[in-house]
Length: 259
Figure 1 (cartoon, helix red, strand yellow):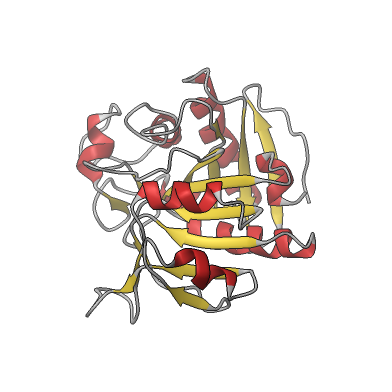
Figure 2 (figure 1 turned 120 degrees about the vertical axis):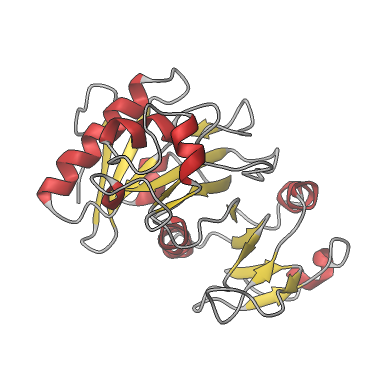
């Protein structure tokens, strides 16, 4: 099953990805899937990101983007400026305020506009901090991401970005063992994966890195908890991008598809 189908993307979509443990990889798969359909794909951020290695990167301004983005054939990544001396990576670019992303999406320059809407410092799991995530109001889909690899690990900064925020919205204390229930809670909590989601946007959580059958069982449990905690989401997606697995999970853990 293709990721775009699992997320319910149509011919036009603005997809904001939040969380940790697979946002960049998921965006890469959506680029490949959309390009195969001859869709015009844009890739940007409302925060900061390392520039994708396999796409042309265009730096443009909040007013100049109309002419600059027209001059480059999609798929294309674009941002506002380069970050000087970024931490943890060789290169990083800073994106746009959400109102600029709204104007770009309203321009219909792109069929799919993919937006990295927060950062995770390369951790497996996170809960948003103050001011996060930065989701454009035109987002049609919000995709909270977590890695199943966090389950069973200690709730510390070794694995989790902002463990104190995870503790604040779960039954865990910092240093406790991360449970499947805790990950599921954060994915669909109003102060977790649902935070700042536009009311009309579809919210579909992803649990990534389910590379083994044991990890897939845990990932299904995570998603069952996530979906049972909210009426906002009707399904989630279990993925192993390494193994080519993309499986839809409903609140009853019914398997609707696998590759």
